[in-house]
Amino acid sequence: MRITDSVIVLVITFASYVMAVNEIAQLSLANLVSIETLDDISVNWKVTDAAKYEEGRIILTPKSIIVSAQDESFEYGSLWSTKSPVSLESFTTELTIRSIGSVGYTDAGISLFIIDANNDVSDESNFGGPFLFKGLQVLLNHDRELGPVIRVYLNDGSKKLNIESDFIGAYKNEYQGATVPMTIKVAYSNNFFKITCDNKLLFVSDQINLDKLISNEIRIGITAQSRKKLDLHEQFEVLRLITYDDVTKEMKEDEDETLFAKHDQYLAQRIPIGDKFREQEARLISKLQDSKDVGGDSISKELSLIKDSMAILLEEVKLVDQTVIRQQIFTLGKSIERLSINFGQLQNQYDEVNRKLDEISNVFKKQFNLLDNYDSSLRAFDKVLRTQLKSADNLDNKISDLVTRYKNDDYNSNNNGVDEDFFTKLKSILYIILLPIKK
Image 1 (cartoon, rainbow, N blue to C red):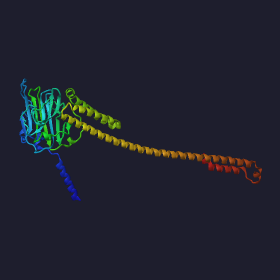
Image 2 (cartoon, helix red, strand yellow; image 1 turned 180 degrees about the vertical axis):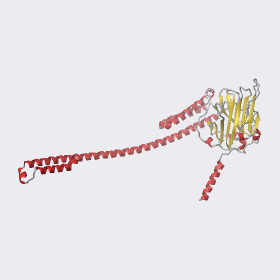
Image 3 (tube, rainbow, N blue to C red; image 1 turned 120 degrees about the vertical axis):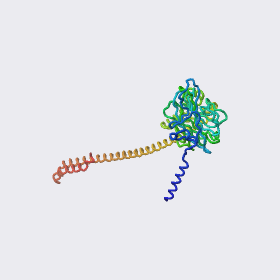
Image 4 (cartoon, rainbow, N blue to C red; image 1 turned 60 degrees about the horizontal axis):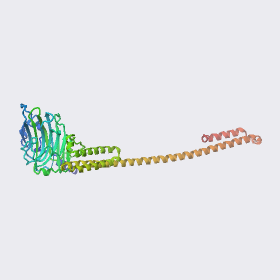
């Protein structure tokens, strides 16, 4: 028996080890504090342009010591992986970065690229990276129209990316001048695709196939650009980059996260139907929360909201690209799933309440029956008591009559020797016997 238990423990341990999420060294910069120079990472990474290492971080766009006030040129810096596993069907990439320096529109930006390893990355016109690629770009910059924003792009390599219009998601984020670094996470596995920033959801879909975009090995890049002028300079720093060979547990979890707010002015004009849909979705989620408290009366309202949202979605098909539609269908599906779960829980609670009410009702019925029996017993006892009292009164009257008759009967008095004292004693004895009943 002990041998069997030991074997089971070993099997479980081995299975846990096999199924564990492991770091991919070729695509990670997990411990920058332990290196001394950029040469220490040159086996797996190519560092370009102005990027340099300093005190546990890689500065992609370091501030120049001397620069002319009239200098309108840019400086660039990038990190590109040079090796990748033979196949990588699932992964999670976590990038921790920071921006210090100028705030506002600076014409600067930093990007995370996850692209096909065969793509040419010599072009630096897209914030230090290429416009033509196959894969994913997550761009962080301060746009003239959108303000500080995170944008997500997918490109199939058939054309150069249009930064202004080809994004599949744009989310407001006040990243400039923040003292705390931010962490962007990207996870992918079998059409499941999810992006978060500081554990807040940016984008999620189960309809995106990166395998078709990245047919070869994966290449990861972090690129940045900034004006050299000190009043516009933005220093982008890489503090940590780690890639795992599967989707991490926290990225798999169905989190009740809130999408970053879209820019109210510009994006609402560009995708009015989309904003209306998201407003309906927010109302639906709010109603779902309320339904937990008010009971089943609100279920029809939630179903009505779903119907309205679907109608809006059908209208949106005519206005936006397929990727956005997929994203919103996925989000709506999640809302419907939550509604079903809440409705099921509400139904169970309703059944439980009914069961308890039935139990309480049965207890009350038993109590009522007991009270009815007790009342009947009291009425019967009262009847018996009244009968006894009446009998006692009749007996008292008879004794009184008997005493009176014997008082007036000279024969009884003279010949039998029965005096009045005898009858008085007899009456007293009867009173004592009947006293409890008479009271």
